[in-house]
Image (cartoon, rainbow, N blue to C red):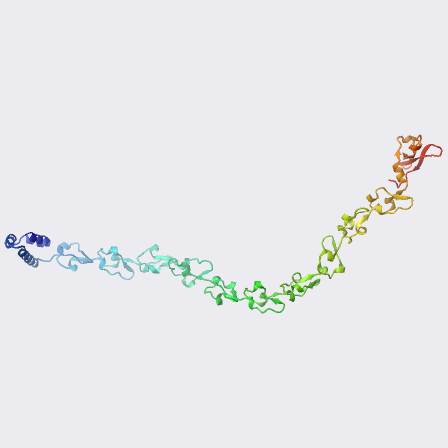
Length: 436
């Protein structure tokens, strides 16, 4: 009995409802016969009642990719086409569209209902294009579909933009490699060639594209040679590559060829030749010496003569400095200095003035005085000139002198006191004019 009830509970609801009106025979079996026999009778009863009932969508379960129609409970039928409507899960998106899994349960059968547009048909702003990797991806905004082209890429130093890729989108993270090409500035030329500065901007670097022969290949004329500094320069001409050697240079007037410099580079007198005294400029205080004009190893001492300006500090003793002779060629006192009275010879009856080294000159008037002048200098002027020499003792008379006004010349004359033969002190001879 318990098993039959389980069978009845497992039946579809309609079948279960029909079984409630089962025949009395079934009811009797339920109480008197075996469960197996009751089950057989129930199945036969249900089979017969199903065949006799009309099919209805209410009891139909839609297949995968189908959803019940809105009024499926009232519709007759027993198939997807009769009872159900197609969902997007069964729709195949056309070109320019891609499926969206979230639309799978939506009822629909068109691209607009079941699919998303791809970036393939999206129009990007200027300098942007649909990224190749997004052509078949869903998107309808600049952010979703567009990417920068090489036109927006600034190439790194020594790289140049690839013109053929200007309008193309570069792969993510590969802007420089995709949009830019290495230039000759990055190329290392092989031995015997050097980078051509006029081609540094060219791309596709190679020796042929970027390099030129160096000056090492130049054939220089006699007396010239390629200097080490030019060996790796681009050869534009032989003249540009070859520098003159001193051995090929002709020295100018006043210069002699220097055999020690023949193998050195140079094209001037200063670089290649030895200067002679004829072109030497003497220093201040020196004068050119024509007698040694052809001498080399030049210096003031070799090529010049001293001027008196260098001797003035030696004008001492009997000589005095003479600035007027500074530009005079000379190196000794007689030429460069002024003579003092100490070197003068006075005539008979006269002697040199006191401190003759302090007097610059060589005349009798300047340098000489009467011999008695020294005697006058040693005398003392009497205190009362109105008395003259009168009244002085013999000792006092010999050491005295009187200063009197000369009424004729209106000058003061100095007269010696002399002890006369009469035993009195009287006025003697006047002091000579030479006495100072």
